[in-house]
Length: 258
Image: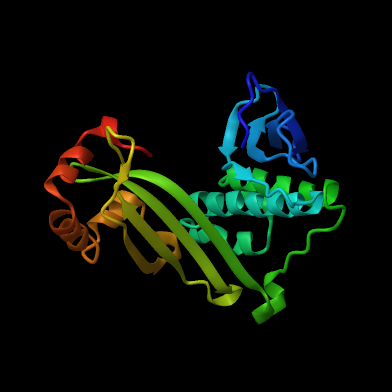
């Protein structure tokens, strides 16, 4: 992405929620375009319509030089769905009493308990209407075994195992027929990433775990570290795969590049 001096941020799309209190915006730096007149780097987030304060943030994504406007729109929808999935796991998944309502896509019934998820879903509905000029098709439980659900989320986190700082990638996936949604696949990938004095990055590699948990009981990071299947393995990894110099460096928070 080209860095501009004092860039002017320009909105590509602004998608209001049903009540108008929030809007989902896609933005780029004015003038930073590909040869096809497509923004090189795009940020997106759900913001307060009056104050502009961010309620839900999305990650920046980059457009390939060969992309057309249609390619960009497809990527935008993909990114919004990732944000929706993240909000699902944060606000819906741990509340079994809400799952049937969620399966039926009853957003008004979910709003009181899962506001951030509902607002992002409303923005996606608006994206289909205003940008893609089509109707969003969603299956209902009455569709039976033909109704499959897939929610995938990925986040980069900062974690602490004992005295050591770790860079963590968490991946969550819920997939299967709506009638048999019982558990979620959880992957945690751990790695210390250091910025050393000579500017080079040193790492002993990563350690990854993939386990299944009941949907409403998937663990946050510190809970995950306490799992008897995880804790001794991470301890052994640090003791046997990390050098003494590395362990000392990871204790120094100022050297960590997250």
